[in-house]
Length: 123
Ligand SMILES: [Zn+2]
Image 1 (cartoon, helix red, strand yellow):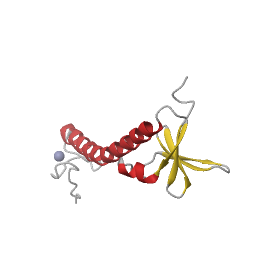
Image 2: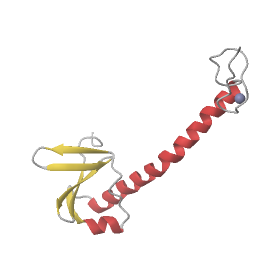
Image 3: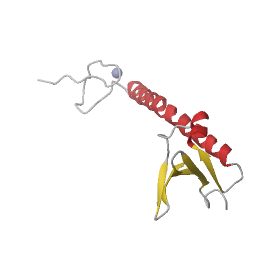
Image 4: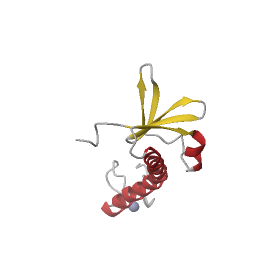
């Protein structure tokens, strides 16, 4: 008795080796392309939000090293606080939330300090 295995892409029953997952290379490639497309769609929305956040911080900081801004100014520009790339916890100085190379830290109720990470882009 053989167990019926179906192609992971087209769903047709597979013949031959029991460890086969696809009918052929076409189905295999199509399966991976499909998965990649889904992944790109999901990741793209977050990528766009991160890039927008970065542009907002960059524009607000301008050429200053640090700048204090109001939370409402960030929100008005469309800044989404939930999208950050990493954080830096500075002992005694609080937590900086980074969006790529630009970061911010809450310094008082409704006020944030914007900073730029140094040393990475400048050689
Ligand atoms: Zn197939």
